[in-house]
Image (cartoon, rainbow over all chains, first blue to last red; front, side, top):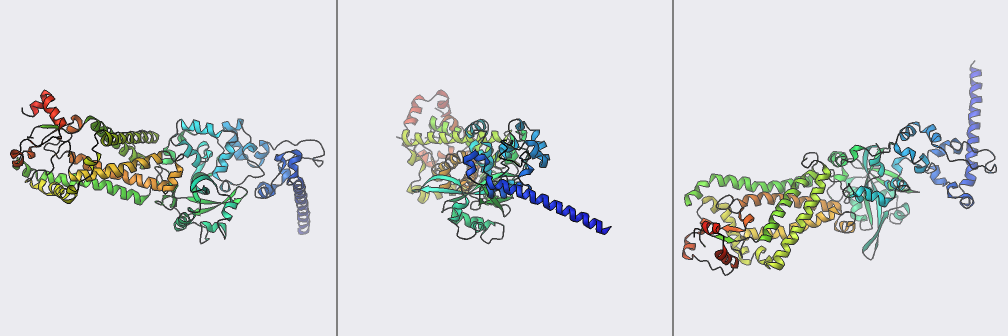
Length: 352
Length: 249
């Protein structure tokens, strides 16, 4: 009996291995043509798959045929053009997401692949807020977005710069502050251009490991002291930190939620809400690696994150106390002098 | 000048500026408190309303400051004379005035050493504090406010100055200083011979001479040399009946 079970297990193992080899072979066969840039000239840029970016996606683990089911063995000689993977195919694996998305008004206007390139897709933490917004601008004209928001939203442009669209336009949850490194290019002392620093930009500035640019001791966490040291030294070299409020758990329920019209959804949570932040280092090919920052760093008075401030939220405790002492000092005059004035009223009456 | 006489101390443009400024600063303090502490201060319905009102009040205060500056610098041409303490003020005047406020006033045995005239409106301590407020604090709070209102278009300047947080820190501390000033200012405004003696003139322009002025010195010189007082002269000639009555004529 044991022998029979062993034989069955051996045969099943061989079968699985064969399937895996065949799949792998098929993926390799696809890669032979689709990772060769010459395919762009032959059929269009959408046929080209960047092998490095694709290898970083979870999709590379399931292989090409898992999504491109209609591709035959005779491809491309069979003369057919396989259709793009449909929403149904995405839903085979991403069932909950597909269900959530189908319920949103956005589903009638865009398919999964209109926003997500399955050959480049990465986890939300590895995508910059700027990239998230760039996807939206494929359909939504930035000028029009700016105009329509400016009608009701104070500092509309600043909000658009500091928030991925999905922060307000989805039911995403758990917001954190993610800092990205910006490169300020100066010309003759005057600032000319600010752009998100790419890996190549930083390589020219940092000699050792890129992470040590801010995380000097390389312990995987950026302390407040390290953040201050970065700002003190690298700001002069044209590097700035730009903070964005990004969601940790992304929802595909694309809509404008009523509570997002209320500024206090973001602006009244108090300093306790601003404890968690990350610094995203570019890893090349538009991918980012996040390093956690010491809790509460965004609340540091000046040097921790000099260019990040959310009214009503990132108030610094020390400055608040100093300010209140100044205001209270003003009150001591009417209270102190006024009390003595009342007590000595007789002296002045006597004179009159 | 005798006790009960009135002098025209505060011209109309200055009074307009003062009350516009007062309304603006009170609004800024309250909306500012709501903007900084939204969990604790909720006065104006929504946070957006507080932000919009704060921005509007800020613009009003900035424009009224401009009006104040243009009036004193170019119309009355008395900006320096009115607001900058003289050497005499610094050497002895401030101490004398402080002694009066914190000592003689309570004893009730000496009059206020400062006599208000249109040319010498403020006592040395007032001059010093108004000079700091009008020449340093107000411009700073206006500039930081303008930068904070226009972060995107003026980002280059914000970065050069030290970043958003420097702007916010300066703006917040200045706002607290203005709040402190407000408490002191309103209290000191009640220090006239009656609680409203200094407040009414800021509305009407006419200040009544304090009884304390009518002391031995005033008795010896009943007509103070006031060639300054073109306006005072005007008052004597054209003063409305109620003023004559008040002056006991």
